[in-house]
Length: 600
Image 1 (tube, rainbow, N blue to C red):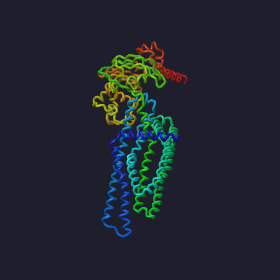
Image 2 (cartoon, rainbow, N blue to C red):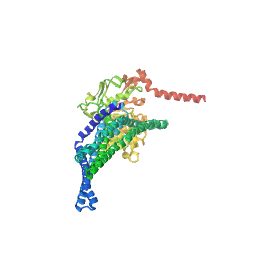
Image 3 (spheres, rainbow, N blue to C red):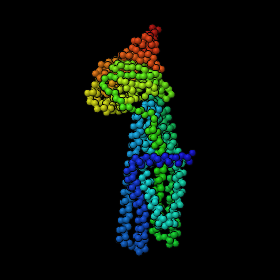
Image 4 (cartoon, rainbow, N blue to C red):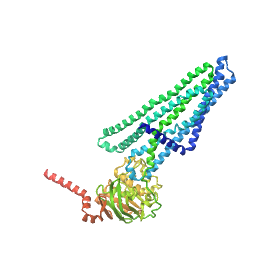
């Protein structure tokens, strides 16, 4: 299995590196130039050392003195080479870092843009933890080889220059040293074959650990209230232990092969010294030549390791890049047209033979309805009847599989990007507030003044409690609005929608945590407001439903009946049983209490 993996990983890894090089051509070229400068000066340092040995060190031993000129020249030579070498190192490292972090930023931005383009149905199929991993850990892993890449490319100059210098200096010693290269190549190949599947597994487990962690943190209230801390800890611990074991396996392979890759060049140096000593004794070479060749071969160990670093990161980079590519290539992104929803008055909503399914599970069937401008329509139905899904089609969070949703006669699929949100607003069941001020949560960057914010708060019946907050509009509400009650969060979410002056307002059970009297004032206010809108409200309370101009009763994903609240109470048994269930329950409870008092 491993023998089939490595060639493919190598090809895909080189393709990943090619993407980075094409994207950051200027930075990469500059980094390679600095790396080549480093490589050239590294070889030059061997030549400088050999020259100093021949012209300064040995004469000093033979005559007991060295001339000022040769000492000065040798010092200047070695110092100059060292300074140029340091400049090459600094430039290479800086530009390699710039290239790596830029590519990570490119990937994160591309993934985030794709998340925003993909429809809600796609997000339903992918855990949030996995999405976070794509934008963080995978982006880092994909471009990890870029840090040593300029070094690896630049030191090819060093390898070629050093090899040529060794051959010119002494072909016999060069041949002895070169015999070690095939062994290093074979060892690197075996290393990659062993490491590739282990690195792939470790990267996958990072995403799985992230998924469990995010799920546990997001469901902290459930975990705490049901006393499931130990079970969640055990679930996370099991996956974390798998990741630990996978990382240890990767480390074990690296720990086995790294010393071997380090040792082989050292063995080559020993071989060069052994043969060189014999040739020195026979007079075939001088001491300076032996020092120069031995030092050159010592220098070759580092560039070979630099190539190994790139190869060592390739398996993890391929996994990270392909996970990112999977997101970027995901289908289901919404297509947009060029139509606009003009005007400022309430819209006319029409649904024609709409059908929708989650994967192979049908939710809505041939739903058709018309909502006149400025009217209030209540969507009522038992749990699972498709109410929330239907409201999502009104704001184009999802597109119907069949049929169409039209606003003022325009199919929402033909509207230009951003056009739907300019005219339609949804306040969902689950209210989300950011860890920001009240003002920030309402405007979300919209350039509106405080007067408009307060007007929206008044319409949402939130002006009173916001005025009583310590800093008013500047009060921080905490993560997810934890400092506020459920009803207060819902009213802020409603104000967030109202400040945008929508022409169609969709309330998906968005006032369920609000007192019935407050809810009635909100709905009356929406009807009488200067910024009147067509209102669709998903409701359960009879008091709320009774305020609607028309009621649409959904059952099993179909429009079972529609009409006024009074009409449906008389003719639709399912509707009557549903909306009177709460009142019946209260009456039964009171009757049971009365019986207990009599029996007592």
